[in-house]
Length: 169
Image (cartoon, rainbow, N blue to C red; front, side, top):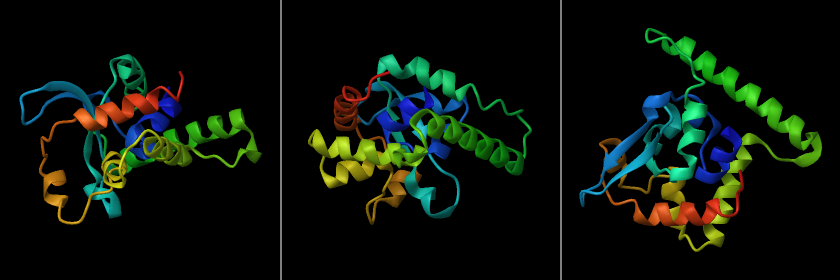
């Protein structure tokens, strides 16, 4: 299920595999609409501002729950222990992915993110919409991202639903 989610939601492997069940939550937008979202984020480094809420398709909720339950970190785990566990999960999934497709496929876990970006463009997403889903924060918008903007997710939901049609279980 993890590889499917990486491709359907343009996630970085660490964004998905570092999270526990609490990353799947309900969000209320500025217009009062409540919906299930995955709180995608990477801590530190150049990607710290890439925090975003991705609307979860109802049929993908069980996939997210299955993947997010696999972190298995004790509540008191140190950041170092957590990072080590995340790296182990990414490495393990990467090995399975490469073995399934073969060494010569030229694909990686991370390339699934770019497959999603290509599909987003193919279904009519603008450059800014693709960037927003991927977590590429436009200049001047970092504060909204960091402090939790609540813009409606109608357009990202529509685009991700179209991408989902091209990526079967």
